[in-house]
Length: 335
Image 1 (tube, one colour):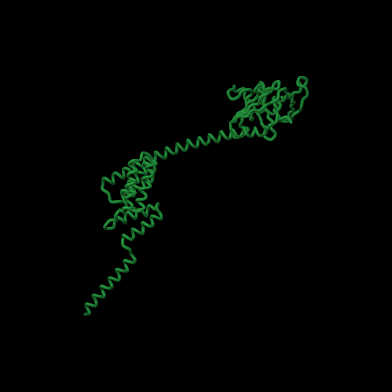
Image 2: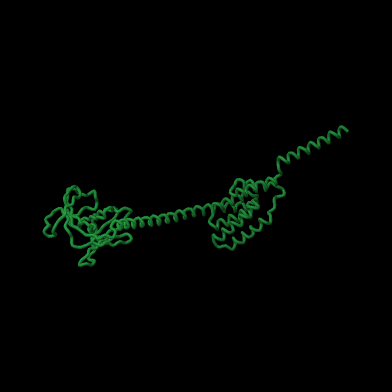
């Protein structure tokens, strides 16, 4: 009787311990379901996904693929077979992802999603899928095929990165070109705003007043190094013409537009980047290019005369001689 009671006590104790252990340590199937719920909240947690795959393979019998997961898997496989470009492949990726959300232990869904991502140009994610696929129990042939596919995708990823870098470089070059063109146009706009709708006249600035009898009346100007210059009235009035990256100054004869006197071409983002030419423009000979200063505040333009050596101011300011008296043309608004 005592022996029977002792045995009964042992059995009851074991049952109690087993019940307690079960409560504290859920069976693998319940653990799997808990991890699946966590993965749905954090679908990009690849470490958790890997643990799910490992847990699923340790369960006997293995967890089945629910019908709700098999449906998008078959649909994705069909779409992938019939698609011929990234758009269809991206749709297949979405369908395989739906299947894997319901059954993260679905090996074939990982492999097919890798193929779909390859077609869609998503090479790095495709590699991630194949690495998850390799975590399953595979035959040697399946494992070899998947590993070789990873090597191939790595090459595709490198080629794609190089191509995108080249395309990005081209895009940046086009953007830089557009910005440079816009900056040039902005310079012309600044000059146009400084000129306004005012009429202009031209004057010749000479370091001598010996031509006073010819031109009649002079105005003195203090320019560059404190030298005195004499301004002689010039016959023609000046008209400005503005284009995208170019400005022209025309004189008037007998009330109509006469000859082209000066051409300015924008070469940068500053007014000082302008290049000026007497008479024609960029197609003219180099000796036609002249030094010019344009004042954005008052709209005055001072251009060196294209006269011979000693009278023409050098284009490069570093060669400017403050003791030399150059000849200039002054274009100023009529007040």
